[in-house]
Amino acid sequence: MGAGKNTAEFFRRRDEWRKHPMLGNQFRHATPGLGIALVAFGVYLVAEQVYNKANASSSSHHVKAGEH
Image 1 (cartoon, rainbow, N blue to C red):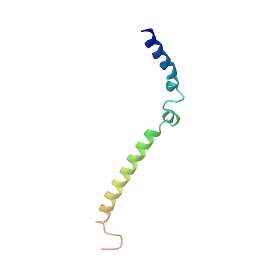
Image 2 (image 1 turned 180 degrees about the vertical axis):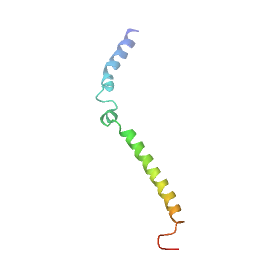
Image 3 (image 1 turned 180 degrees about the horizontal axis):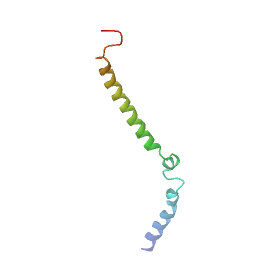
Image 4 (image 1 turned 120 degrees about the vertical axis):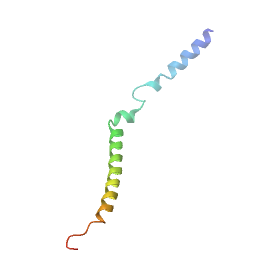
């Protein structure tokens, strides 16, 4: 039974480097707010497309200045 515990301890010590803060999820910590910015930019692009489509369809019904 003692050999199993020693083996588990051996592998536990060998895997500690995987939990080091410098190795885990660095991109997320290096770019705070990037996810929120990308979502906001996506919403802006969708809203701009919706606005342009609504504006284009409503402007085609308007009479230009000087025309009757």
